Image (cartoon, rainbow, N blue to C red; front, side, top):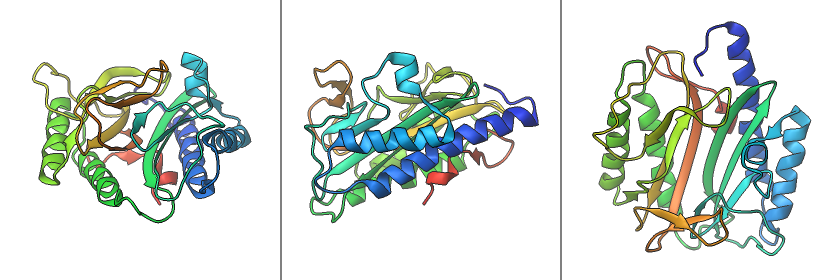
Length: 252
């Protein structure tokens, strides 16, 4: 969407606060021995406190309120009573929701408890690269150049990117134009970021795989060839300078 009034900004900011707060609280609530279904139900309760509705349920009839992916899973993981979180797990939570006709999207990876498997360098790289990408987005910037930046920074850090997952426009629905804001350079992408537009920018930083594939349940994606992936995502408003990070409630 493109913001055309202060009322629209307030609307998109409120749902962004809701998803950002939900993700932060879910990360704080998670603990070893807990099932991902229990964590998802907690996320549902936080969203309901805001009056927000789960975007994956509304849009795709997803079998969960949020997406929770563990270890080799990249994204779209289905919350399950049989998936029990353990110390040192690489956990990714993606929270997207709707409130009063506005939609926002926010995601992040973290280590549960002690970093016994040394996932933190990967997570830190994903956060750092997202921050750098956001710092370079403004009206008129080529979308493909942000993909180039993300891929270049990943290589500098000793990692790869997932080439078939991307950020996207958001605001009045979960996925809007631009449909794909890739983590890699693609010369066929000719669009530019537009001032006042709302977009969700994501980094999918990988230790090995460069493509995601279906795990076999119709939802969960894993890396083709294995490895681990850390994802981070913020919903932003594009401006003439630094973007406005709408999901700042999850910056901590």
